Image 1 (cartoon, rainbow, N blue to C red):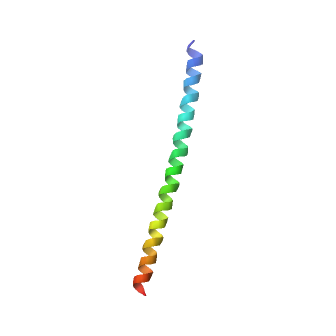
Image 2: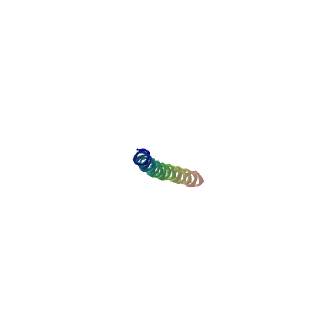
Image 3: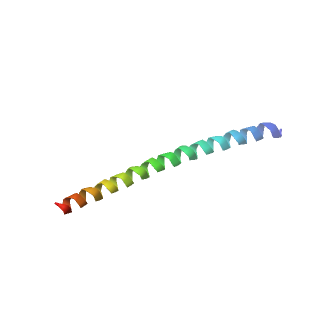
Length: 51
């Protein structure tokens, strides 16, 4: 009785880990995109002020 529940728990834990991993990758990609946009905006403002 303990074996099936243990296997199901590990499978559920693996799914949770995969979901958290994909979520963290998505958040990192979004954060990097925002950071890149912020840097490009600063660069553009700097160029405009230099002219």
